[in-house]
Image (cartoon, rainbow, N blue to C red; front, side, top):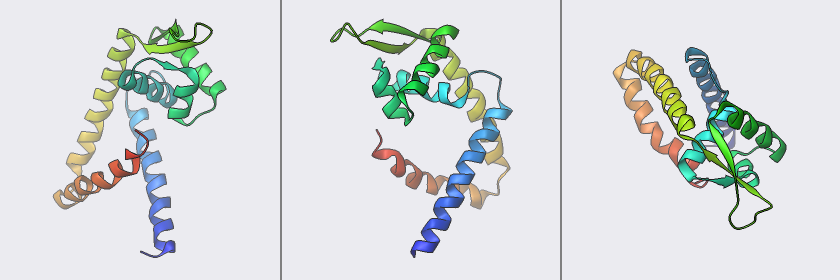
Length: 143
């Protein structure tokens, strides 16, 4: 594939993923925004994290992550606890309420996405399934 075709695929993929994500958020139940959901999902998957480490993992500035975590703490979805290694620092941790909320949001959005996939012709469903390997590979170096 030449550079022009690669750029076209990258641009189309970027727009499609962003639009699909936004559409699924809007179709779901009201609740925390994408940044909060993503940060909470990272805490659930990786356990307690320092704010700076969480910000790096999420690809946002520390100040942005500080606001996100403050919102999660205020809602009862996360808590702050002292870092046992450095008592001057603190760790963000998902609460049980946060895990339940995240599970519900995922369930709602996955259900909505599943309905949309079911409406696709079978050949496009197969193409989508085959393309997941490539999408997952794009994320493999981030984990």
